[in-house]
Image 1 (cartoon, rainbow, N blue to C red):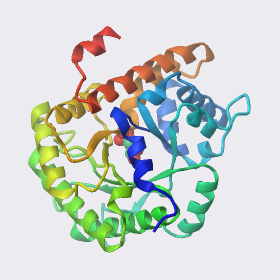
Image 2 (cartoon, rainbow, N blue to C red; image 1 turned 120 degrees about the vertical axis):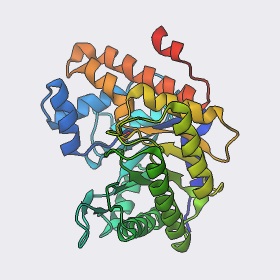
Image 3 (spheres, rainbow, N blue to C red; image 1 turned 90 degrees about the vertical axis):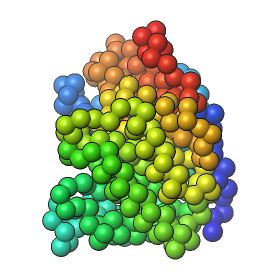
Image 4 (cartoon, rainbow, N blue to C red; image 1 turned 30 degrees about the horizontal axis):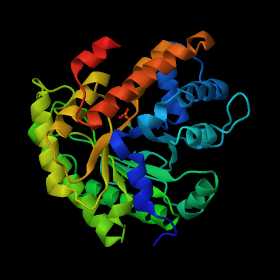
Length: 339
Ligand code: 13P
């Protein structure tokens, strides 16, 4: 179906404990991050921030791929080097977020479906020309008293598979991201039930729409207690429930599973990943595709100041290294303190 070896690209991204940096915040989302550190949301500041991350020396050991936003894929560093070239110099695979956001689902109050399929074939052709070798599409599933509906899960699974098929046709590895949100006061069992229903629908849709499972990466949520749950499940329970769910739902043909962090703290996200990898052997690589959990400390250390670039890079490299260790089941709490 593709002119390229998608399996090789997917495997390269998650080789030897490497994972993905999700730096694909839309202009609206990065504004929220910049507001927290008092930085204006200008195109130049967005460029400077991402240039800082991509120039962190040696990050390619830990980071196999970086997901970019449309603007970033087209941007150049202050010295004129395309940002994509900075990534290639570190042997990091550039990726592109192609969805256009979760929009209200007709007839389903409180639920959403992700848009962006119209014209996607043409956009993929352009993105490949700009150097993207993988892509991301995020579907959002919310847990509430009477939701998610089967209608919402099916609509999102169908769109994810449409996207993945078009991505592979263009020679681009699709990251398939069905995110069951952590928002709410539900318990671990409820998150597990909804995550299983969602992954079941997603893999059915992928199969029916002829997506080659060897040439995708799955980006799921962990099975975790709701943010506002009265008592939260511990690390071992989260790891065991997440692995049970993935083993039930994800065929072993899939080369890698890269989790989103979804509102977990930096250390929590690392500790959970490490616990799961210690429970191996597993049929797929189990790694990270974190946004907030890789960037929080780096953003704060940088705070928009040129003189803080080295500190921001140190903070980013530290988090990347911790998650790389976790993807190998070799992380320890002392490694955090040592830094
Ligand atoms: P978080 O890790 O901050 O959840 O972001 C990952 C992501 O790419 C969501 O689409």
